[in-house]
Image (cartoon, rainbow, N blue to C red; front, side, top):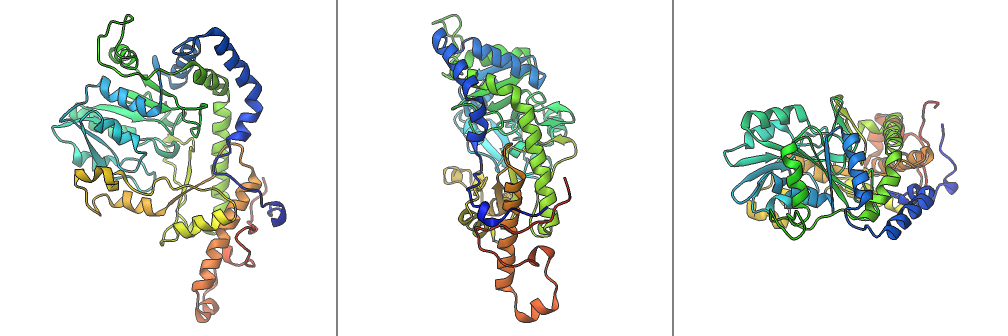
Length: 421
């Protein structure tokens, strides 16, 4: 299947086009918001309770507790487990900032682990070397929609008597050996930020747990430790999920599996297109652990050889959105310099930070748009190879098949052979 004519394929391709998802649901969402507005139950109202029940069933846990954000979910989980001054929490350095700040806000010390280079998730082999008498919690991140190795992490936690908090912000619907994320550790922490696979119209979060001894503590901590009103059993925070956000999420929840299936189909199509273009020999394509159900919050390629930023600029000129998740490991951030990490301490994290580039993967992305993304990347590498090759080299060594078509400008597509659908 060839690409459409380049003159017809110059509309921007956003990294994430929420409008395509929201427009068909507009009337349903407005009706749901109107019901909340008329009810006056704006905070922890019936819509929140409905979402908590649905979420618990989806994750196959007895308890789900709504809160104000994914960042607060992490903070509340660590508070419920008693993390504080002098404790250590082991987490990956290759993750979003809030995973670590939840630790430091409680006076505990984040201990950064390196990642598995294939999955970008926390490497249990490195974790095993980091556990000390001060370690209290292991905090794996299910990054880009794929679970960390929860069997190995769970075994380490059991041997050392540690709790496990799952950062599930990017992974709703992901599974490890058929078990939903958020149901494997002691507490699961989810985000409803709009860019997530199930995103709200603002901030929101959810905690999940199987532990009956933690659920009441989590509910108290999210609302100033108050029960009954004006009687405070614990020193908590104000992190209540508002009913407007819950109403939006209740409208969207029935579509989550459909959207997940579309993301998985897009990931498979990318794999096919990149392979047929010969780019699988140049790029590092995402790998899925066979024990994991990947839900593809992000589709992240590796661009070795120091070409990542140039490729990103080339794609931007072609009106194709990308993002770098993440340009620095957390151990390299200025605010964490006090921890004393040095260059080379976490080599896989540092290498990933130099190579990763996220491409559009949202459910409504079309096959033609994916062909354009891959074709434009092929054009970049063809241009780079042509500029670098000497006449002798180009005459004696046949170029890869993705270099064998005519050169095009950055805002044009390169035909990519595909098998028939």
